[in-house]
Length: 151
Image (cartoon, rainbow, N blue to C red; front, side, top):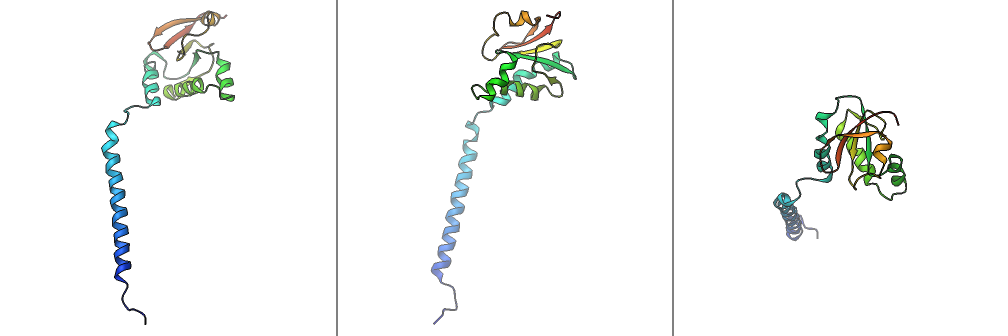
């Protein structure tokens, strides 16, 4: 004989399952909200943006500037292709992003050149070879150069 009314056990079980799942989800949400203030306020991209943004008042609003770093410019992409060090490429791309719409070219032969020395100074003679003269040292390895002469 079939029962006309649903089983109270089944209904109670479904209600209990929904209630416990809701409690677990709300508890997880509460823990996430409670722990949020302890998370870092800045990430590496934000730190880089703030550092590079110091250059903006010193640069023209449009046009292009050069870019140099600790390694030779051609090595930035070579290291990335072999995945030996993508940090230099990441720094270059983030510099382009931060200074947009100004174009940042990966070469030292433009009138203004951004020096982003995250791993120490360039090889001896690099700046002289390209005719780069410091215009403004912003600290933390960030230097704006002007190019003199045609080496």
